[in-house]
Each structure stands twice: as C-alpha cells, then as structure tokens.
Length: 409
Image 1 (cartoon, rainbow, N blue to C red):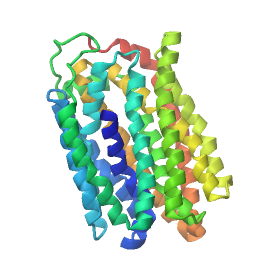
Image 2 (image 1 turned 30 degrees about the vertical axis):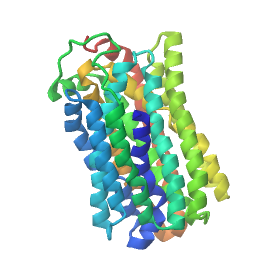
Image 3 (image 1 turned 120 degrees about the vertical axis):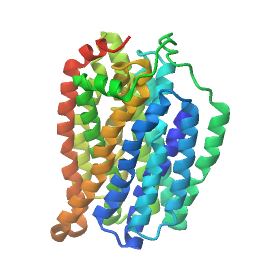
Image 4 (image 1 turned 90 degrees about the vertical axis):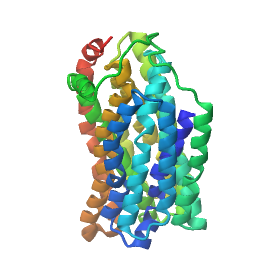
C-alpha cells in the first residue's frame, strides 16, 4: 500500500513534465519559468515542511499522516488544471509539495521498523519503485490526456483518484510497532536538535546527502526536459513521447531502483562490508554519463532516443534505496522519519528544486545562438554533474563503517 501511495505521489509530482510544452505554449512561459514550476515551486515547500511533519511522524500515527498527506496533494494536483497563469500554477504546485512532504519520511520509518538492517536496502528500494512507476503512469497518461483533451484535464484526472486511495489506506493499513525489526520498544522520541546533532556528526551522511542531491539534480533536470527535447529536436507527437519515453524511463527506473537495493544488500552481506551500499550508487552514477551523452548527441531518431533512455534510467535509479538505508543505520529508532526528512530536504532543494530550473535557464541562455537545439546543449551540460556526484559517494564510503558503528543503541 505504501508503494502504491508513492506511485500516486510521483504521478502527481511528475505529470507536469509531459505537459511542459503545452503549458509553455498556453500560458506563454519561458523555459526558465517552466523549470521553476517543475522544480522550486514544488521543492521549496516540500523540503522545508518535511521537517516538522517528520517530527510529528516520529511520535504520531504514521499511517494517518500518510493518508492526510495523500488527500492534500491529490486535491492540489486537480486544482493545477484550473490555473490561469504562472503564479496561480506556482501556488498550486507548492500545495502539491505541501501534501507530499508528509509521505516519504513516515513511510520510510514504517518500513525500517518492519525490515532488519541486512534486508532494509531491498525493502526501501521496493518502496522507491514508486518513483519510476509513478513517472511511467504520469508520462503515458499525461501524454494521452493532453493529446485527446488538454493539459488541464490531465491534472484533474490524475489528481482526484488519490482522495479515494487515502480513504482505503486509512482503513486497511496497520501502524507497525516502533523498533519491531530490532525487537525494541523502549526507545523514547528524540528532539529535532538531537537528530540534527547526530547527523552533523556523521561525515558520511554529509557526503551521502550531497551525492543524492547532485544525483537528483541531474535526473530531475534531464527528466523534466526530455519530453520538451523530443518535441523540439525530434518533432515527436506528445502521445508517442508519453508512451515510448514513459515506458523506457519508468520500467528502466523501476528495474534500476530494485537492482540498486538488491545488489547493495547482496554484496554487503557476501563480503561483510556495508560500504557496498555506497559503492553501488558510485559505480552506477559514473556508468550513466556515456549513455546520456550518446542519446543526446548521436541518436538522430526520436523514437530511438526515447526507447534508449531505458539504459541510463536503469543505472540512474540505483542510488535511492541504499542511501536511505545507510542514513537510517546511522541514527536511532525514533530518529528515522526525521533523518529521511533531512536527507530529502537536501536532495529535493538542490536536486528537484534547482535541477529543472537550472536546465531551463541553460536552455534560455543557449537559445539565441542555437534556437530549438538549445535544450540539447543544456541537457549535455547537466550530465557532467554526475562526476561531482560520484566524488561525494567516494568520500562517504571512506567513513561509512565508523559512522554506522557510532549509531545510538
């Protein structure tokens, strides 16, 4: 159920990407403005409100928090279809971010209470399949609805069903006991300052959070503008983009997300070395770069480019489960929701907030010289950031074992 909720989370978060060119044309926006709608409008409120909601989740009934959050973001997604200008749509997107802020920290905490540390990366990766399952559905459904009706109808149709799911979630999901996986029930809640103090003392967490942020900077930046790239450069129809790019990005991302958790657990258990939870994201991050460049520079057919995206989607999705798992391994039982919120604060402010916006601004910068090709060069530049990202993964791996050993009992 939590994974299904996360699918709805990303349908509502990411559907704006396939609708981008239609929104730009209808509302008369620049690429930079669209990048702000796709990124910072959502990410600023999503990231900052995640902290107080996570404090609530570490003491409250997490299932109820997820249900309330789902209701709010679904209603705000539907309202996006009524926007008459940039600022109205900006505010509705901020409302989507407010609702979604309560979902992941609460869900992460519940999952880590159920699964022990040697299986947790795989479990969290299964939950994280919602990122790409939701992106797949959003791209395919959004492309069809925008082609058959309009971008406004698309927002309404994908938003409203989440309210029904919230009711089902509240009725059928049970709240797991705190500390069930560790067979502990005597752990008191921790204050915000205590959790921050623990995280600040972990050198590997600082590098993990920055690596995740830069990883998301690339994946969100490229993902937000690939449909626009396929429309402008390859002149593909929106419905075809939604189907082909949605399938490749969605299935590739789901496969990579599961594989990242599975292989991290497998290698860490086989070699008795938890650093494999960081080495797997490090290797996959570097492996993505040549595939990004090949598709953006050398592939000259839109359908081939869209379908080829499955390869960078696989390697680009292998980071999230292991990084969440290692973050939870560094903190106490009643700190997990807050630890996730802090990780996602950094990840989403830099990755989701700035990534699409920076891509749009780069495209606007290149447009006077390259015209419609400007988006190609913007996306190529973004892929370089993966090198910086890999450096932080490497630095995190150097102190990971010591930081895990220092976790509260």
